Amino acid sequence: MIYTVFLGIIIISNSSRAFLIQTDIKRRLSLSYPLYTHKSMQLLDPLTSRRRHVLKCIYFSLISSLISRPPTSFAVSQDNNKLLLEIRLEQNLMTLPPYAMESTDVFYPSYFYGTWDVTSTLSSVEAPCGEVLFGGDTRLQKAIGDIGSTLTYRSRFIQSGDSRIIADREFNVQEIAKASMGDASVLDIHASSNLVSCTLYPKGSDQILHADLVILARRQENTNETTFTCSEVSQQIISTVEENEAKIRGGFTTPNYKNRQLKQIETISTFTSQNTTTEQIHCIQRTATFLVPSQQDPIALQLWQATQGRPIDVRFYTVLYSKNNNNT
Image 1 (cartoon, rainbow, N blue to C red):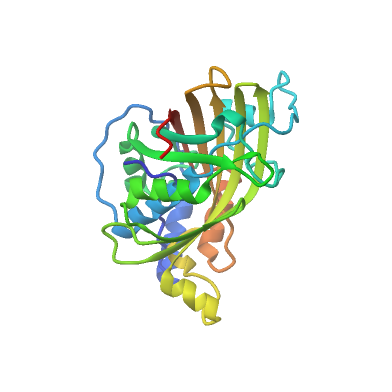
Image 2: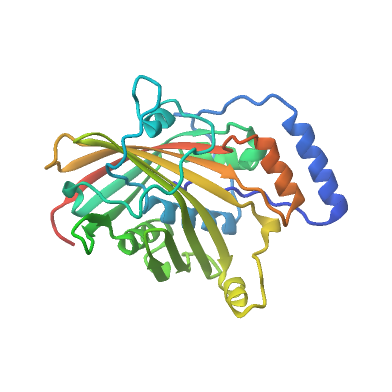
């Protein structure tokens, strides 16, 4: 199974132990780390905690439902008239996204309408800031071990109120969650163009979790009639149901950030098809995870400063959409 970009660094809050961890981080970050790019290495898959496994499943379910982008603006860069997102994907740029929220929703080409069978295969993993900021050697090796793994699910596209084609986000999230976390994993879900909010009970977990994926930026570029590139930048917020309910009641202001890092994920996807009546659509997708500064955790703030604006986790996927003509 593959699960996309979920940092699992655990920071101990005790002041003296935090100082030791902070000192060790500074020492290890002073080393010169190579860029880890693994396309075919087969390493052992070490055991990880159940909670970390569950959180990775949740994020994959949410982000995978939002990966398609159709044509819109033609803002051109200075590199041989190529579009901004095309350059970021082809050159695998390790910089923060330079765009903001450029459209209200995702409006797909008309041939996306209907239901598709989807396979998503992890093809490479990179650690631009080294294994420490990636989450440690265990996490890096686990990610490498997932290379070549494929998740299979269904995706559906419907007409909006103004007759444009949009993703059926609730359907898509539930389908991905069932494939990655079990058939009964989604207890409740609400979705809009800029927010997916769901209550999840993953198979094998002893906790019910609340997950939000907030879209912060979006950009779409049209290359030609059968090729388009898109991107969304999202922030994930995950808590237990108890934490979320306490926050709603006013008895809890923020989740426990000591045990996790806030992060933003840029997802760029390029879709190609043979023609506008195609039965298959091919997609190359890149996810880049950036740390976010935290005012609640000074160590998390220093980790963010150490990245110098670079992503900590970069992954490429090959995704194939095959038309499902059963209308199910």
